[in-house]
Image (cartoon, rainbow over all chains, first blue to last red; front, side, top):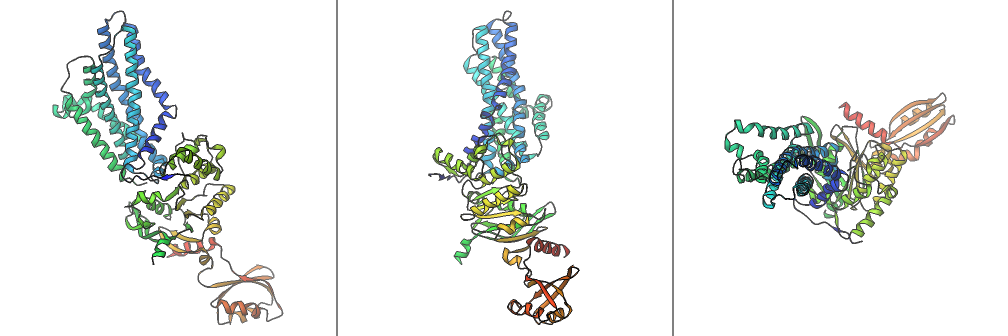
Length: 259
Length: 322
């Protein structure tokens, strides 16, 4: 038998194996199918209904603008809630069930444990809740109005929305390392989003700009050629920074966890 | 002595753990030798699981240190975990995985290399623990015994130098317990087994060294034979009938007899527990002294063999009374 001992030594020891396990929990079960059905129904299905309803009244340009707006608004809202719900138990659930303690007795690291979840959830969730429905929406638009969204704008808007969802995944993951039950984890993550709807009226503009709150609205504006509410590079860059910070806090806090 | 140092797999020095004012473990000094089956005993809440968590790096000590294979349990935790297989008291796995997938997931932390070789190793391991026929079923439907067998399989999948088992037989029926003990005995030839339990019968059957923990403190650590020999004195159990008065006087007068406790076990039979300070003299003269009077009849005679339960209870009660 030629089984060789693994030789990693750094923080990434066991990362690949943990990633495979995380991906297996999606793609090796019916979970991916449930999510695919859910997001196609909510996002593409909703738009299909609108398109069928208004196909005779709307010009292709108008139809495209309407569907893009609805798609990005729905993506910014429903998929955000989905991202929080999908991530809320990632750390909390494993800690309470005892599987985290079991895995951490193997030669792997705590940063690998946390980051493998982030990468797997982000990649899978964005694919199922954003990329596939976006393709679905494009197909609907093509079938109904025989046109397609302009690729650069559409892709830029998708990227901005993906950053927005990624932030909420990182935030929820971080909260999962700070609290021991799902309630405060999802409550605070969704509360942060709600705060974003109120904050523009209460907080100085520079604070609002440095948060991810404007990203969903910005994505919708980009996709529909509307004027941007503010230069998006500021919240986009800041959000990337917040994601890194949230992951750093999650790794630090989980590293101090005792089982 | 370098050889002696290589021979020690686990060594703790003043290992302590406090949880919000509760002293779960106090100054534990422990030494576990290579290829031993080391029974770690204690009542519930004694600190057994806490010790195991500290060894595995799942918790940090408040004071003291632990080394495994000469490596620090905190600083070198990754390297330590490469050499250890662990079975938790209530093992939990990912329910959506099958037994084979669980083992594959575990093995991939330790091994890289051709998939075919790994798969062969998985099949052999599943066979070893009697799960070959259930290998590809999701483990959410497994019974407690099957989960425990899977637990042993995943713990030893990488052929570790040290197996740490937390109450490995606690939730099993007698058949399951026997199976677990047999697997442990089989693995002993190439690994050291450190296991916690409160099933004293199992410890007496398979362990060669025992440590007893109570309220976070180590109250005894010794080879099992030494522990079962009692408190340093040899004790003889004697059952006799007939005229025992003169026999008692003669025996009590022997210079090496330390104590003589008498209990009546039936209307005509009495049992003595005779503690002696000179085992050699007792072997030669005790029975003869008793039988010097022809009216005394000796029904049973032998050195007393303590049961671990008795030793355990004496130690725990003695410690609690302090």
